[in-house]
Image 1: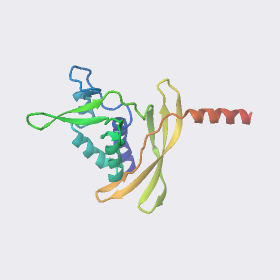
Image 2 (image 1 turned 45 degrees about the vertical axis):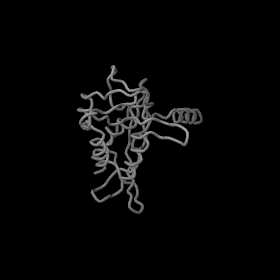
Image 3 (image 1 turned 90 degrees about the vertical axis):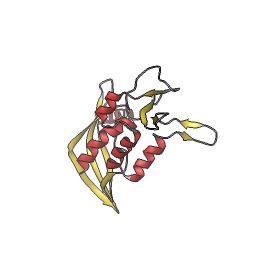
Image 4 (image 1 turned 60 degrees about the vertical axis):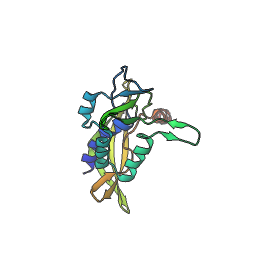
Length: 190
């Protein structure tokens, strides 16, 4: 169950936190928003925001899904201005009101910057507390420059009416501080 959920989360992590949905650079621009690449959407398995939400809710808990919707699919505002724009929004046909295309914010700065590969054979439950089960998985995180490091990702699972769901982010980035810490420890051991 954790393995299946984590595999589903890989695509969703890229959509929400990583490289995101590819888009066309064209004359159909609306400010910094661009039309989503329909071929990429087909590869991802959805074509509307509602379909993305359905996939999200099959993998992530209601609470975590809601957090993604309010921080990624909605603009974050304070009393004066927009703090961050929605990464995606659904555009509709003016005449029919039918979903037309997903619009992608072209200036989004990804939070998941590095490639992560999970060692699914290392998945193991480490503890439970109330209605949550905590699972760890070993992973390798690789930067674009080729440097890589091992890390452990903790996944929180919660049981809802329709089954188990992931209740936290499951991605990791390369940790430069870990390199520095390991380097200092190596010097101390010599």
